[in-house]
Figure 1 (cartoon, rainbow, N blue to C red):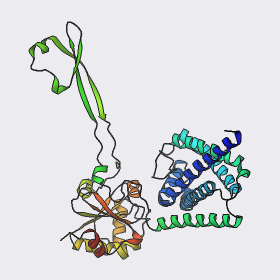
Figure 2 (figure 1 turned 30 degrees about the horizontal axis):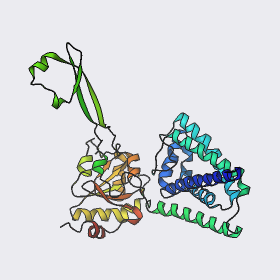
Figure 3 (figure 1 turned 180 degrees about the horizontal axis):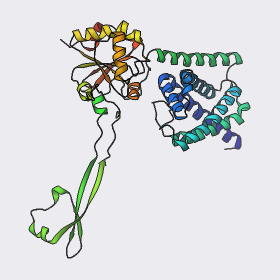
Figure 4 (figure 1 turned 90 degrees about the vertical axis):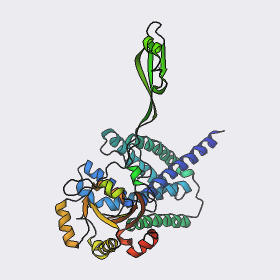
Length: 384
C-alpha cells in the first residue's frame, strides 16, 4: 500500500469516526433538549454563573444542531472547506474544556451523549483527543475532498439537515423525547429499578490438619461436622469468598415520596398494584399553571370518580405547595420529592405518568394530556 492509499484510508476513517460520533451526539441531545438544559444549568452552577440560566435553552438547541450538521456534512463530504473549519474550531474549544472538567470534576459526567451513553469526564476527554486528531487530519487535507454534488445542491442539503435537526429539537421540547433513555421510560418496572442488586457469593471454609499442616477447602454444606475424627484432627484457619454477582446500586436511587410530616409513601404509590397517576411538577413556581386549571384538575376529578389514585409530586416547599394548590384549585394530594429525580421522570413541567404495579404504562407532556375517558379506554379496558 503506497503513501497515497494510506492517506486516503485514514481520511475515510477520520471522516467516518468524526461524522458518526458528531451525528450520534447531536441527535441524542436534540431529541432531549431539556436534558441538555439541565446539564448546562449544572455547569453554570458549578462555575458560579447562574446569570447564564436564561441562555441554557438556546445554547442546548444550538449546540446539538451544530454537532449534528457538522457531523453530517463531514460524513457526506458536503462543503468540506467550511465543514473542516467548523469541526476544527469546535474541537479546539471543547478538548481543553473537557480536560479542565476532567481535572476539576465540577460535574459527575459531561453529558456529551445525553442520557443515551454516560461516560466519565476522563473518558470524555480521551474521546475528544481522538476526535480532535481526526478533525486536524481532515482540516489539513480539506482541499483534497472533491464535492459529490454542485455547490447549490450542497447548500440545499446542508440547509435541509439544519432545518430537520432544529425542528426535531423544538418538537421534542414541546412534546416528549421521541426516544427515552432514562430509567422511567415506558415499559420499565420501577419496582425493580429502585431495588439494589444484592451481592451473591460462595464461602469456602479452610481447615488445616493439626499434625501434617495439610489444608482443605469445604463449602459449608460439605463440611463433615458429624465426623468426630475430622473435628479432632482438623482446625479452622481461614475462609475464602468467591463473589458470583457484584452488589449494584439501583438505577433509581434518589426517588422518594414524602408528605409534610416526613412520612415516606414511596412504596405505597410506586408498588400500587392498581393504576396510579403521578402528576410531575418539579417546581410549582415554574410550572404551567394553565395546564392544571384547564386539564389536570378535571382529569384528577374523573380519576377519583372512577376510583383511580392520582397524586402530584414536586420539589417545592410545602409552603409554596399550599399557595399553589389554592391558586389553581387543586383538590388532590401533593407530595414532596427530589427535584432532580422529577426532572428525570418526565421532560415536562407539569407532566403526567401512568403506572400499574410499578410498571410505566404511559407518559404525557402537559400539552398532550388526553381526556380521562380516552386513557381509561386504552389502558384500563379490563377495569370494571
